[in-house]
Length: 246
View 1 (cartoon, rainbow, N blue to C red):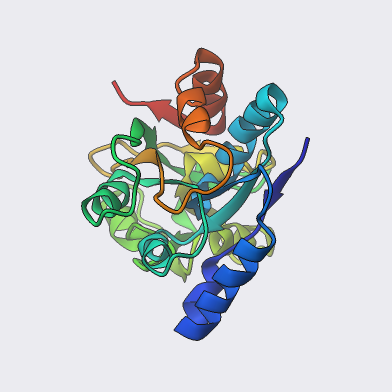
View 2 (cartoon, rainbow, N blue to C red):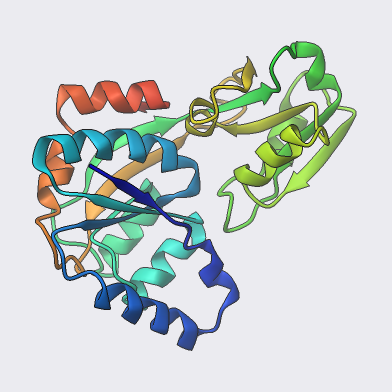
């Protein structure tokens, strides 16, 4: 059993010709029963957990490509190979409207809540210090500074970051006292301490769905989307930070 993770965010920095070359390279080596899954960068840990269960049950491997949310649609439009996507519901629904998904394949609505975290041993006092949060970019999907401005405890300094990996890096390097990330990112980094969970009206959770794309060409992706509805999968996703919406 193996799970493969790679980042496709680098495609934002290369021209279209390079992106299509990357797509061709992926297709050339993908003549297998493996499935390719693109997901938001914050979901890599959650997807690794649930795809491990799928592989153990079926023997089919999942190749996970964490990708900046704003790049998922452009990659589908340019036919960069993937079989499945897991992303914000608005992105998945837009992909469906553009005819990029298999009809009727969209499943689930999961909530990914925002939390404030700190390094081991820190406490709520860290929230008044230097707090790292993502800027509103294609790599983040939310405006961290705007959310921090709505909190009662105002930080002394807000450190703008590209994405959640950047937030975690600032914490590890001692450049920030606290950071704002999605719960899935916090759960994937258990050494970090959850300091606070802002209310949903202050920090709205991301709403997420999964779907099979029209580019699917390997093992049936519907087997995986069906697997996501299994009670065991629901429990795995909950433990990883994703709550099934009521």
